[in-house]
Image 1: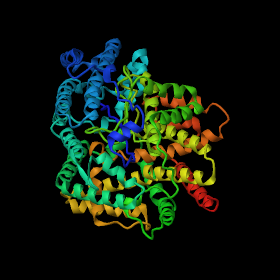
Image 2: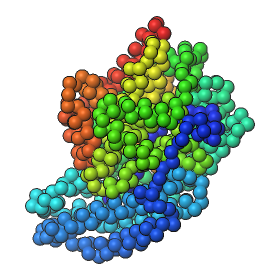
Image 3: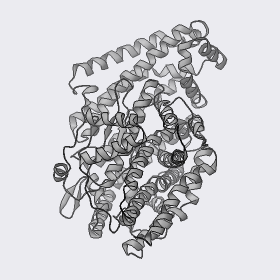
Image 4: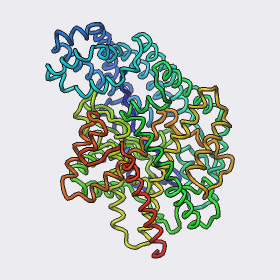
Length: 619
C-alpha cells in the first residue's frame, strides 16, 4: 500500500475582530508563498509534461517488473535494487505534481479552475499509481528468508531495509491484488470525493455576525473576542449555520465511517482505530495507555483549570464560547509579522543556530503563505511536498499571541521535514505520532523564551495560563475528539446515525473532558461537524496528545541535560521514518510503552496549573 503524502495540519484557532483587509495592512507585509519551486502555474508546460511522462512511465514500470520481483530477489538483486530506485523516483515525481495541485487548491478553495485542476490531478495520479500498486503488494509476497538474504547481499537494498521492515507490517492486512486495485481505483469516487465535498462546503459557509458576513475562519475567531456578547453572538450564529448544513455533514460522516468499516472488515483489523495505529507504527496498547492516562487526568487538569478560569471571568458557569475567552488583564498586543518572525527565530536560535537557519529560509524564500483571504483554507499546516523540493507552511496570521505560537508550531514541522528529506521519498515521511514532536518542541521553545522575558508575576501568570489552555486544547481536547470518533464509528457499525445522535455523543465527551465549570446550550451539539480531522484522517487526533506529552517529557530531559541534547535531537528528526518510536526515544532514556512516561508528560501541565495558583496570590 502506498503511503499518501499528507499535509500536517494543526488545529489552531487564530483570533481577530478586524476585517481581513485591515488586519493585513496593520500587520505589515504578510508573505504569500511562491509555488514556483514546484511549478510556475497550472498552465505550465513542465507540469503537463511531467504528468504525461509519469502516466507513460508508470505503465512501462508495471510491464517491466510485475510478476518478476520474487525471481529478481532470488537471482538478480541489482535489478531489484534498480527497481526500488525507480519506484522511489515515482514517489518524488508524483508527490511534486500532487503537492502543487493541493497547495494551489488550498490557497483558494473557491476558485473553480483550481478545484478542477486539483480534481484532474487526483484522477491522473490515481490512474498512474494504479500501475505501481503491484510493487509493494508483490514485495510482500516474497518469502521473508529470500528477501532478507537479498537485502543483506546488496548494499543498495540494504539502504532501504527500514522501508522493507515498515512495509512488511502491512502484510497481514494485504488483500488479493485485484481487490487492492479496485479499492485504489474507487478511492477517487469514494473517500476523496467526500473529503472534497466537505472542504468545499466548509469554505462556502458564510456567517452573519453583528451585521458582518464572515468566512468560517473569521467567525470562529470571534469566539476569542474579549467581549462576551460578541462571543455569544458568534457562537449562536455558528450553531445556526452548522445546523442548517447538518444533513450534508451527517451524510458525509456516515458515509465515510461506513467506508472505513468496509475496508477494515475486508483487511481484518480488529479494532476501529487499528489501521491508524498501523500507519503511525505505534502499538494499540501504547495508545490505550495514553488515552486512559489522559482520561483519568481530566479532573486534575481541565476540570481544575476551567474552574479557576470561571472564577477569573466572574462566572458561576461558563458556556462553550467562554472556553477560549481572553483572560482578565491579558495583553491585547498585536504582533506584526516581523515581530513574530523575530520571536520565533530568536527562540530557535537560543536552542541551536542550525534550527534557526533552516526556519529562516521559510521567510526569506517565500515558503510561507500568511494572510487571511477569501477562499483560503482555514487553520494551519506544513506540507512536506517532496525531498527534491522543500516544505511549504500555511497559516492564517492575524497578529495575536496564539498566532505566534502557531507559526512556531508549523515551522517546527518545516524544520523536521527539511532534515528528514535526506532519507528520500520512501523513508522521509514520519508517522503522525512522531511528526508532532518537532512542532510542539518548537512551540515550547518559543513559549519558554517569552516566559523568561516576563517582567512581573502578573505577566508570567497570563503567559502560563495561555500555555495551559493551548496544552489542554492539544491533549485533553484531542483525546476527547478521539473518544468521540470511537463512539461514532462504533455505533455506525449498527446503522446510520442521525445528526441528533452524533450531537449527543459530542456533548457527552465534551462534558466529561471539560468538567463541571461548563454548561452547554443545545446549539453546541452541532460543533462536531466543523472538525476536518474527522473527515480527512480518522483517529489522527490522538497524535497531538502523543506529541505534546512526548515533548513535555523530552523537554524535561533537555532542561536537566548538561550537553549533547541538541545533537541527539537533530539525529532524531533527521531519521525521518526510518526508526520506531522506541528507537527514537531510547537515546533520551524515554519509553512510551511505560504508563509513567505519560504521567510525566501530563505532570508538566499540572505543574503549570499549580504555579498559576501560587501566582494568584502575587499578581
